[in-house]
Length: 223
Image (tube, rainbow, N blue to C red; front, side):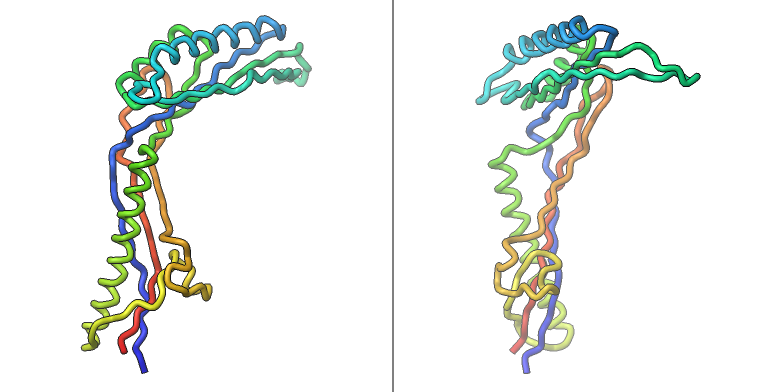
């Protein structure tokens, strides 16, 4: 009767980010709607102008950007004595700007903090290019499967058995759910992680490497 081994293989790779997408909010509040809206609209125009000067999809420094619609709302706050205060109007808009040149990203943030009074950097999403990410994910999956095969063979060798033969590979945790066809899990469990950065103009935008990880479960037998 064949001896069966079920193992989990994993692999991680680390790469410096290639893109940084600034998450920006432009916001004001005040007693009247129109002045608040106009101030946000003016800041938005200043941001648009600054981005258009840098935008080049092929070579950057800005490769992509997008703006949301200006959102307005009003509220009537309460003070600490329980008295309802006059109406306060709000206006805000979100902007996303993707940079390939991180030095220019830092400079751009510093300039806009000064030029646009309602400017706030909410964070930076660090990423790889799509082509590089796909390539790295493929490599990490392959290494995870190879790690599983190595583990299974080591177990077999420790028992004085011969070469192992794979019979199932799946995403981590899926073999225990009865999903066992070779490759039936659709690939490895993938994880990508990169720290965000947020703050004011004094922020040093120096991201850590992006981690790409994969885990697979595999079943092997020795005849």
